[in-house]
Length: 349
Image (cartoon, rainbow, N blue to C red; front, side, top):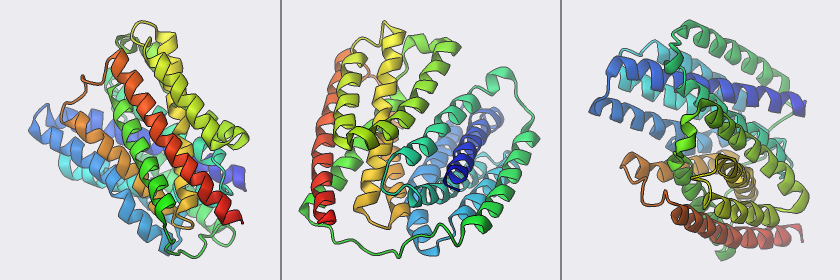
């Protein structure tokens, strides 16, 4: 059952993000044209897709109907295609649908992860490929939107089926408000700041060699496999070791990434390894509030994207800038994981 749950959610994560990327970067953009309203539509999509996961997650933790939440998310994204003539409305609906899918799937995957990072790493990894391919859909003239709508509706049906299969087997534990002391507070803040930095850096990596479709595609595979490997390796050698190793290595690789695509791709791979680590560590600190966990970190991603929306992308996008901000992230995450490890030791006593 575990493999089935992770396989379904990971596949549909790709599909939902693919659909949203096609809707926003292809259909809505074509109909609205490049103007202030398009900027507002894209900003609102990101706000509802990421920031709104926090309140949805808090509600989902209590309702405990996670696969249904994801199924409704798929349906909303499908409905959003029908409002493409109203770009802002379409983006808001798609954003809410995306958020609901991620929250439902994220909670179910965390519920079966046994406080480990492997499964969450697999689940979160596939979305990057969907976003990339969906963003490229306009360049190949894709306009068969009914196919995407059909796939989304089939996905919703499968998720309804999944809910019936697991509703008595995979349940949220009783939601409690954890007692957070100073150590846990520091850990939570450090984990969130790390994700803010990751969100910002991930959006500004516009290396010239990415103009090659093949190299850009390989770099997305690096994102996907980086998240997968981070969870797998982190469970084997510990969250602290994988966090420091991956960020320090990526920091120095970033210094040479502008002129060397191979080193750049490796830097991206290592940089993304901490994704499942931060997600799982925060989930373990927050006990049974897994939807809140997902929501806090996606809100952090949105916060990291705000400077990009405002046009602040060049100051850090230099060899020294990427080296410095990645090492800063390593230091902050080191402090966070150190406090997290103390929390887990105390919890197990």
